[in-house]
Image (cartoon, rainbow, N blue to C red; front, side, top):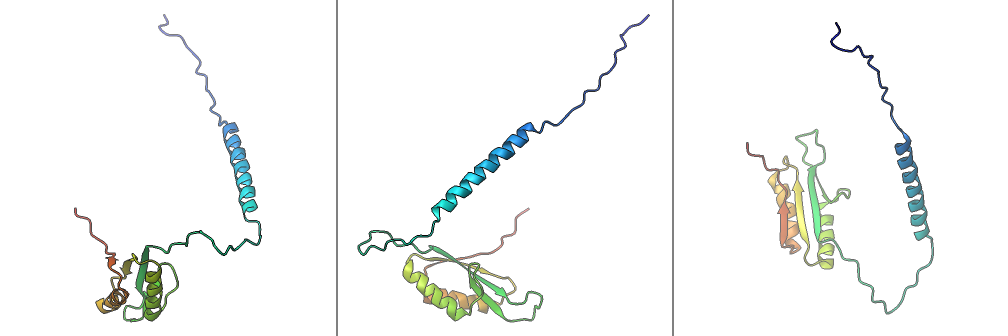
Length: 151
């Protein structure tokens, strides 16, 4: 006596339907082609008027400046050359940084400075930058430091 039927197990083949992916690809291609065309149409070279009595606003200077202080040669721990830069700009002498800060302070009276310094720098090198910031009468100075997480 048979208690169950013998069934043949049919193997269903799973296939990947690429049609939706191709549709999305073509839609994205068309989108980027149109955006490229519109953006290039906006940048047609032309001579713009310069009115004498313009009411256009002056472009505001940034309210925050980041000053980076680091060693010139990271591999040489005995090296004493310190590089100072404003943001991602190339390194400049501290006197040039002072002039740039003075110009930024004139353009933006509420200027704030964020000071980032390599931990291997002696405090006297960081203090020199702080003195330049204070000499330019910049009242808000934030010093970046890494805080260890508590376990």
